[in-house]
Length: 365
Image (tube, rainbow, N blue to C red; front, top):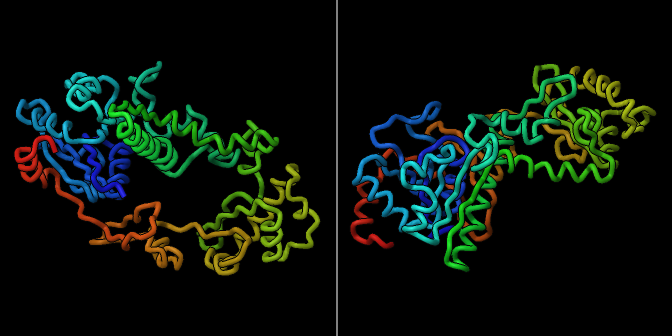
């Protein structure tokens, strides 16, 4: 879908490389600039899954020849992704003004936690810190538990990488229409706050409370996960009355007068305790089978490896594990496209000679 688009990615951690992978999954020619002679960044493998489908060039940006190669790549690129603290690229002589002097139509994507300006712009932070300050962590757990989310998903990926990718795509459209590039300031604190707007809309109907455990989606007995007899869990979220009624029917609770009072907040804790006892009496797969294909809105909580074997994911080919590297297929999907197969994960610097040769043959391409 993005055939003909070139993205230049400066090696980094987390959401920036993920956004670049997403664009590569969609067909962009993503060239990742790995540090010449350097080991992977801390916590990253020698060949990283999120480099799949990209081409790798190894450069030392303090070397004059390599800097010239980087600038030549800037001249050929539609977009650039970097994830350093504010000012780092400027000190290298590769900030937006420097790059726009080379390529005025370049869309310059900047991925940070706190943004390019503001009182915390130069402070360190990580996923949980950003979403804690944005408000996105507030409803993440029951009121008697510390707020916790799946690692990286809400902040780095949801509030960071996805907003960077959307910003780059919007900037590319604008650049094609007007011939000038933009700086995309993608801050995780901004994106994760923006993600809250669907939840904030519940406040317009009185269904959202600033007290944890008292809102439509974070307090009810019909909107939480429960432990099962074998140590597994099931996730329950039967919001609409007709789905809640089906949930009660399958649990033989349809005639229970307390459970009939779905939105009585005073009953939520006690009814949650009753459901906890019910689900704890049988193993997870018993409940999965009972609710499978129904409108009761109950699903087993699966590990990624278990998810790969689930009939839904098998049918949609959601998960793949070539050579034991478990990975999910791109999303969304497009009509008229062939089935996806995991592309190559390059070695660091694998395409250096090829890319340099391309630049030498056609420096303006």
